[in-house]
Image (cartoon, rainbow, N blue to C red; front, top):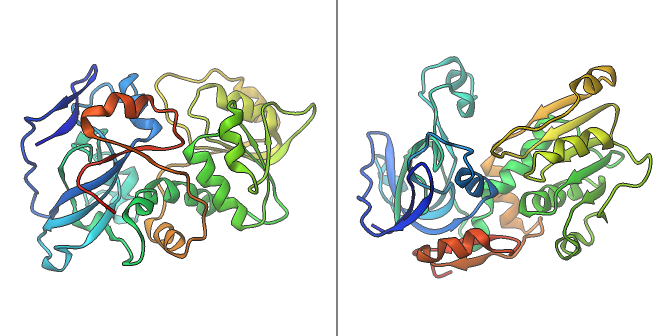
Length: 314
């Protein structure tokens, strides 16, 4: 089987990977398209030093084998975190925080940068019949954007900033725009910021004394937290979306004195994301597709979004 394998130090394209064998509650999925996330790039920089296996966690595919025959033949996307099923987190609907969870492409579980993968059947979501596979590929990052609205109040009167000009920041802006929120997007790349036209104001740098009630940090850089602390108002809220290798250096006393709320935010709800995509209610970045053997070009791509065309044609 073809795939991109991380050996603990670097990624490598291989054609000798064994076919995955599904467990008792797992389905076998033929991968059609897979998306490159900034987290995948951070794995190469040491974000998951203990991981060994096939990389990737954003995918669309077709179920070829399942313990539930009704799933066979369905076009699907899937969630990342497979919990143990019996701990307090799994029993209380917080499977993504299970201490023993396996995370596809990152922790104890092969991912989707290959021709096939396995995944717990209860983590699968069927793609609506009218939704194209290439658009469905953005389900996971869109769900991550929707998680913000699950965690903090968002309203038309809210003054909010987004730090970052990449794919995730774009989807966050697209979702918050639906609420009529007054948005300012801060980025480093003028050519990327042009894609945010119509979603809010765009800036390369903050104006003097400019502050916001809500700041979403989605830069993918340790420097983003410092900028967020400079932009958030006293008693305001910072939502952290970035994952990266390394640590951030900030003055924590500033958060205490100014009574700042800091909220970590990870994976989000898939079904609402699929509905928004199916209805065409969010703006979508273009995806630049590569073959698996061209993974280095895909990872280095300056496109708004890069991915792999593995077995798909639509």
